[in-house]
Figure (cartoon, rainbow, N blue to C red):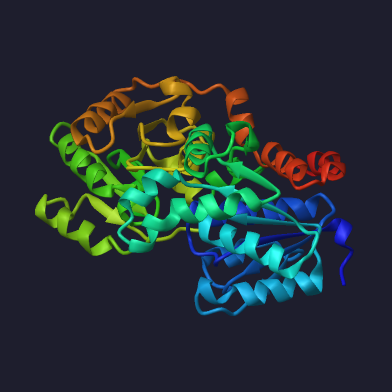
Length: 378
């Protein structure tokens, strides 16, 4: 058995390319630098972020074909390993983590981190099971030892959904800015659109799913293209790719829109883009906005629930436009392309760094004694 006083575990479904998964990998890697023993417990060990897990992190593969099959295996893991704390993210893994702790009858401190605005997600996701999300959260989340939300908006929504006092939810912004982000942003990108003399590139990054509402970005791009020669690049994978390709053909944009798939180093693309646009219909936070700001790229974002308005200080550090409004988005994009955008105060971005978030998570996990060492290593 490992030393439970230095042992922390993180439980996720897998490591496919979503923002939440990347955040949890960032935290796992940072925890090891603080002197902790870290297990990354996965329902099934798959996904592109596996390659970004530090070698010091022990990957525990529960080998469950789906998340619903993982509770008995997580219970056995807790019985065997007795980590001091278990951090889970997203609602289904979080519900399982709470159940497994009580079923295993261990003293492990379970902390759940909610990354989505549950009430909005329940109304918009196509899966019927999504309608039950608020009820399941209401039944399970109050049994956790601590609850974290990734934005004030997510916390407000969650408190209303699960009917607990708002002050029982701790807000910790995501660890998005790594210490080496500027070095990574300068790594070469082979795509010809970034060659000298080429038109400006508008960039979008995210899973190709309904939530990210890339159709609005594509329609906004079509409007911008009527007034200026520009190109649109989207990084991401997902089930909406064929639908987006159809829309691109219908608007006769095939020569000026590229969907490149998942890229391990999005910072290099962000740094070379003329503008970054988040078109989401809803968010929990909006990691990519922070990343773009950190490498010096101006941004335009929908004012969706929740996160973008907090990241952009209510519009001080980037344009906020109504959800689904391609005309307003196009107008804001053109303003940026014409040189009208704000500078970002570097001190504002500090709250999104690895060291800031890691120290706050260590506190809520009951590991305050490791905060100083973590800050030294950052």
